[in-house]
Image 1 (cartoon, protein in one colour):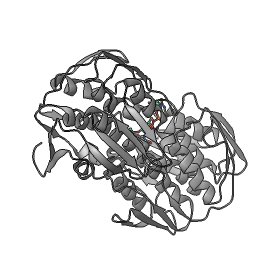
Image 2 (tube, helix red, strand yellow; image 1 turned 90 degrees about the horizontal axis):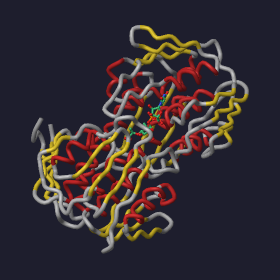
Image 3 (cartoon, protein in one colour; image 1 turned 180 degrees about the vertical axis):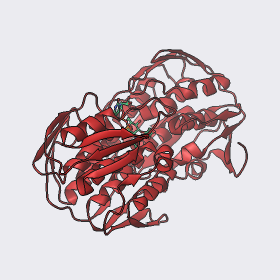
Image 4 (cartoon, rainbow, N blue to C red; image 1 turned 180 degrees about the horizontal axis):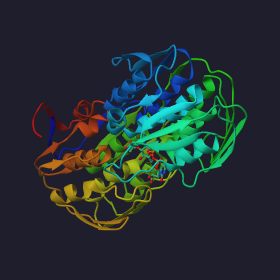
Length: 422
Ligand code: EPZ
């Protein structure tokens, strides 16, 4: 397996262009199953998770052609040939369960292997399933598969018991072709959901309330394939700002939507970094007076759980005390033990993490355990004294496009060693 070798200590500087948003692209790729014909998606990042989702839709009968130079994806649907998604695919990526909404809407059936727990928590899918039931599907669990059946879905009102990005997306995709009016309450307001909604509306769906807690959908008979450009990735954007901060560098991210990165920019400003932004860029510079702050992860527009690990890596070298409270996933702290190996002073009490800033982190051999924990280790290694070897970097390949190339352009001493370790 490949590893990263990172010689830390140098300040990052320069400009980095942000790729398309993974978590918008994934449901949008699946939503293309809702229309026969050829859909063209632009700004699709070349990531492992995107490749997995392409296997998923191929398994259901789609054909595709992904131009990775141009980040353009063409998807052709003539018919849905299969309504069953096997364990092999779902265990590789839980977001595969997004196919349930479109499959139910188009074929009245969906058999999807129930995803197990994962490195960041148990992650149940009860909200998706009770939402499908509210729309008229019968759900059963057989041999590890969720089986959903319906003679026809019907518009309905459904309030989600907790805010869920995945359930909001899945139910929207089920409802757009469902007769009557569906009202979804307690919806996720993430930009990824708004992007999915905009894509569906371009296809002909009737949706109102995107970006609010209440989304109303008037079912239509048919959707048409379209050409659509995915929004920039706010988590990638935040990660580069945080990496720059950790190295006390001066970096400008371009091709971004600053309005999506607000909570991260506020947290970095509170720590004392100087942030400026324009229409599609954000820049960060260090300042002399840095201090600790309190960060609480929340659904959008709050501070994203996907940046909790990277900002914790930064917090380890901010003078004073930082407090991080994780409210979305119950045990998204696998990076803590690795950061401690690099000299961080971190105490975990339930969902509250107290970080006492140290002067310097030291290099150590470390291992990624999930995508964002991996990003945290890269941030720590860039700031640490000495050369850090990071293993299991396939986690970062799932969600950061050309991470080592982009960091190299910013002046980082990072090498990807092919087959360098287990
Ligand atoms: C999405 O996951 C993202 N994944 C995650 O990004 C992100 O961390 C998460 O939203 C929160 O922002 C994709 O978009 C593909 P949720 P999702 O349903 O949809 C609980 C990354 O690193 N819940 O909003 O799975 C759940 O356990 C990833 O890019 C239920 O209890 O998240 C969690 O505590 C990882 N029952 C909370 O809700 C359900 O049926 C929010 O989860 C569904 C969720």
